[in-house]
Image (cartoon, rainbow, N blue to C red; front, side):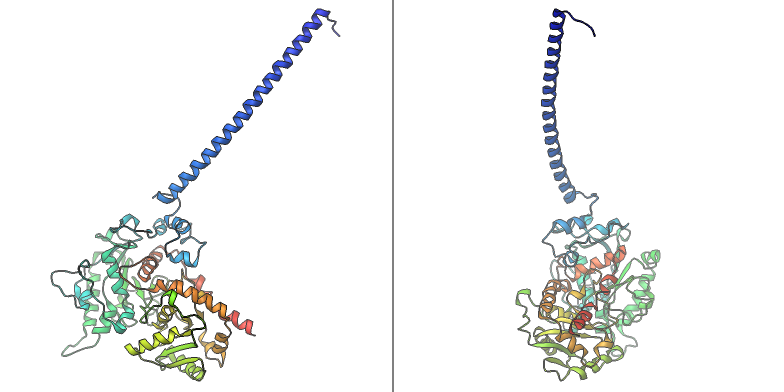
Length: 498
């Protein structure tokens, strides 16, 4: 141990004291700096988060090349657009994120300008300039100086009555000529298009010109079909793709009877597949479009309620049909004597349509039974009347079923079950009042999706068809998910009853 003199001891003590004071002051200073630094970092972090939120919002809303698809942005942010995906699947994006098709993520602008921005359109469509005799000339518009009508002056009228059922071709062509809705727009160059539309009003041609008259040896309808086949086979656009990028409208089940064998490679717009071989038409490449309803569509606020609909079941139409329609006869004999059932023969005259409109709006359930073909206009009349459809048609294909779950507003019954004694009445009487109200409310929501109109509106039938065509091109949706739900309701009700 080293000995220190008193003076050295005092000096050493002072040195230790001074060192402690310096160290203490240094520690206090570092503490204060630490607090200041921590607060500064907190402020910087808060400001950074704020800027991140603001920039993300701008990126979501305005970025044309954003990693977030505009359609998904609309799904999450926009609440005032009647979008068909959001109605049925509020938590699901409209297309799988894993899709390789970047164009599949485009969706209709919420408030399109009067002149549509081609970059915002869902589909770019090239349309052949076929002579008027193939389209609006069939309506009587035969101006020799023009191919297409001047829509700014006059909208050609489509024939009324039963012709209207298959008028889909008319509404789509009008929408494309105007291109004001911005879902599908007309482009001048086929190489810039997603799909090529063939503007032949084949349903109207069949309805009005399929019979041979006077000294004719062949009908005008067959002549037009033959001319169309020759025209398309001579086009470079057809030869380049073999017709795979062509869209052909043949909604009436008997339309294109002569020409359809040449069009198996094209995408067809049909009412159903009932009279087509699978090699020509199938759900994998073609689009099912709704009939135009003939009865007046009810306003959601004026729809009769459960108690106001005094009839339980309604059906009016042809009872004696061929092929699959034989079931109508069997059901007629099973149900005709039920007191709260209206099951009678009816014709498709103007008077018959009026009676059907009154009957459907006063009934809780409306039967859609397979006839000569799996589908008919009756289903869409029921939807327009907010009468819960009861679909007895095993082979039916339904419009937009890849995005609309029909089991939420319709009841499916297998034909083999429906003809069992007492089965159908037991099922329908067993559906609880509250369940019917839920389906009725859903019907009021989906009814606009089956409405044809001009100008087209977001979510109406025309808009839904263009979206369906777009999905076929992208091949990103599958209707099998909702198809599996078809018969769940019937099974659950019968289990509860038993």
